Length: 157
Image 1 (cartoon, rainbow, N blue to C red):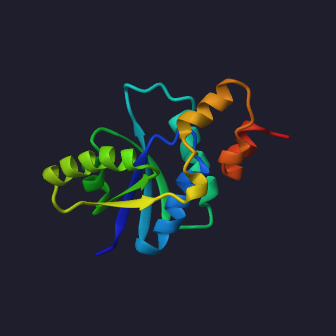
Image 2: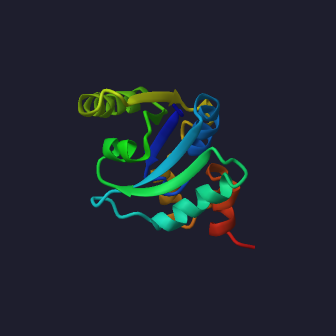
């Protein structure tokens, strides 16, 4: 059985923190699907297609990483793609408390899917898409928080 993992999120935009989690998870799984979730209660800054393009560019030479857009329950999407693992990044203790609640609910819905938590590198602790969006909305330079593929889109030469 292939070890398929879903890394769900909005990734609006993709940050170095997201990339850190994926890169450190790669040795653990045969395939990581970055699931760009569509949340009707959120108004994203970037289209789902743009976010997917960023991941495709970043991981163009890594066939074990794919990106996809999905709607609905994450656990149902796991079942659809035959993922038995959900990957979540943790920056702070408060992240863990929130994520554990979701993991517990997911386990109740499907006991065959396990949530794996990876803590972010300390240098990425302050990197959050919300902060990056705020920097961008106010005309600041968010480059220190972003992978090159995102920088190339946001700050073309």
